[in-house]
Length: 197
Image (cartoon, rainbow, N blue to C red; front, top):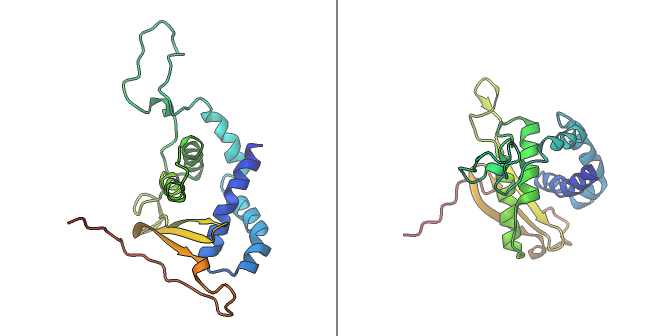
């Protein structure tokens, strides 16, 4: 059941990946199953194994821990967040999977569109790859190029890029959806800083 739940939640991610690649809607509908199957098959370790590994973290909690180690011994929580001690912090795929699963399953969001979108980006920021931390070849590093989500009901696509943390949105309903020509928007890549003075 956990595998099916995570696969269902990941379909939006697959759709976002396809949309970012400027794939037409008909191609998206025809290929989403194949792409999601290939995406999960390409995970290393495989998706099912990563889901199974979540069993290792079932004792973690967003709450402060209770002393079940030695009841009666005066052990105390000396810092906030100690209920999540043991949550992986390295950059391996398996650790990042466990971390984002914990954050997603325990984070709280408001009910508005803006609050939900903001929370989505906070969840995925928990597993960002920063330049310089994961070398894949001499002077080449894995980074999070972009993060995106889509409100499929409203037709709004949201994204951030490595060089721009401000959320950018494209509302597809503000365009002529019957146009014969594909409409493309250039990525906003430079950091957008909102000066207050």
